Image (tube, rainbow, N blue to C red):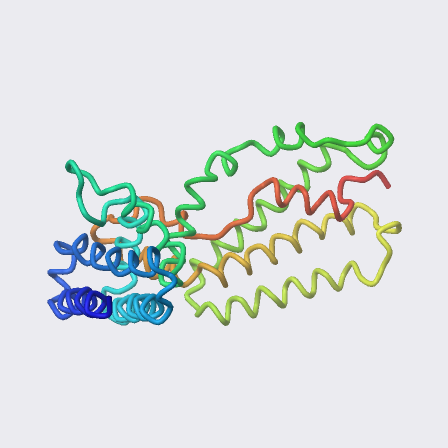
Length: 276
C-alpha cells in the first residue's frame, strides 16, 4: 500500500514538474492520480497510517498547484473536472461511477477547492436565487393573530428592495474602488457601525419608519462584508486569470451571496414589516 501511495504521488509530481503550458493538456491525468490516491484512504480507512499518508500527499500536491503562477485558475478547472466526474479510470468509455464518487469527495474534502464548492452551490441553488421576492413573501406562513399587526407584505418587499439596492451598490463600489480589499472592508465596517449606532440603544417598540429603514442598509453592509471577505479574493483572481480565454462564463458564481429568502427572514425577525 505504501508503495502504491508513493507511486501515485511520484506520477502526480512528475506532472507538476512539466511546464505550465502542458498542465492544461494533462489535467485529467493529474486528476486521475489524485483519485487513485483518494481510493486508498476511502477504501482502506482501517490502515490509518497509510490512509493518512495518502490524504497528506494530496494536500501537498494541491498546495504545490496553488503556489504556481497559474495555480488558482488551474485548481478551479481541476476542481470542476473532478466535480463533474471527468477524472478516473474509464469503464465502457466513461469514468467509473466509483471514481466519480471519489472525485466529488476530493472536492468536498480539500480547502483548495473552496471556490469550486461555491460555484457548485450557486449552480445548485440558482432556482432559489432567481425566485421573485414577492413570490417568496406570498409563501410565508403567518399565524392568524399576527397577520394584521406584524406581517405587511408590501412593507417587507420595500425593505428587501432597499437592501438589494444598497448591497449591489457596495459590490459595485468594491469592484471600482481600486483599493485593496482590507481597506475597503474597513471602510464598509465603519459604515455599518455608524448605521447601527443611529438606531441604538432603543427598544424596537419605539422605532419609527425612518429608524426601521436603517435596517436594510445595515443588512446590506453586513452582507457585502461577508461576500467580499469570504469570496472577494477568489472572484478577482479567477475573473482576471480567465479574462483572456473566457474560461469562466459567469464570475459572479464565485461570490458567496445571501439569498433573498434569508434577507426577508432577517427583516421579519427584526420586525421591519410590523405595524407601528
